[in-house]
Length: 241
Ligand SMILES: [Zn+2]
Image (cartoon, rainbow, N blue to C red; front, side):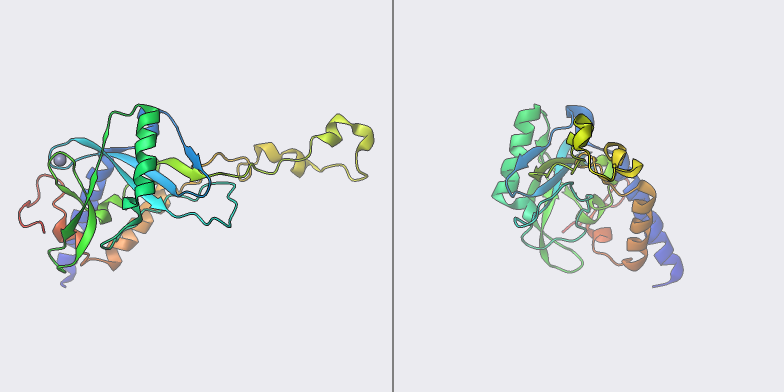
């Protein structure tokens, strides 16, 4: 591909990503931070976004299986999948159940996007895509994966282990204090952001996120999303699938 054409595609995709981010927000900003905790359920993040065609707000989500043998003390940073196949974990009944429960408990009056099989025009492969519940417009997974971390909220996580805090007894009972008093480093533990951090806050910075997106675009200039996702309105809308 000619260098100029490639640059034009990258610029166009960057513009679409910008528009996608402008129309997306973290659900916790509208409905409050609310995280469900399950025994060994998924890590589940949602974003609130507007349909590019009819502007209807809808919830999109990304889910990651947890390891039942692992004890987590914080949630991993959200890393939304950029490609999906015919089946996807987001369509698992348990994941749907948790999204529905979160909607019920927060009173969020926002509909879920639907997940439907769509065919990629460029490769002809079927895949499970998010579509608008009102007008059935496709929300391309590649562009969903480019929504900044700050626009996602953690809405469900497996039970998180409480951060290990120093045993308070040496302070309450000075006589039982061990020979080596806890050093300043230990005493400052509650302020240490790496340990007492609430779930959902270990996020990739926007600068790093943007850099990752630029790298993705440069490596993947023929990504089918560029052909299958007419985003935003100004671009060609015909021949989607
Ligand atoms: Zn729509």
